[in-house]
Length: 137
Image 1 (tube, one colour):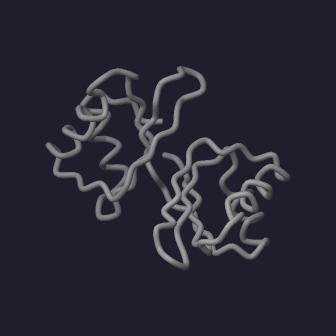
Image 2: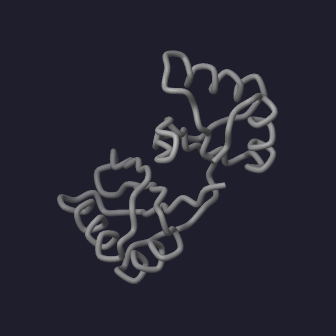
């Protein structure tokens, strides 16, 4: 299971630079990220980082509204149709995915799908995906 850092941020110029500067100072690596700043005033930044608890404390200390939640990472082959197969397995298992974004496994150089399924028990989803032959990270 992975920990995801989520931040509710003002949609203004330079906000990502401020966030990444804090993480840089703390020597925390960003492993995957998605920004949903499509609103006029505020948005959500979601990240998987090398040290989630320290990142949470550093960003919270800088005044950001943050949370840590469990998300799942599923390693996939880097080939045509991989994402479709994974999403098919989730659909066949009646698992509703709230959002996804990509990272990669630095050890195997394979893509990792980061996913959140709010209405599902993340441990049951992980068990289901392993039973279907997928590798959870």
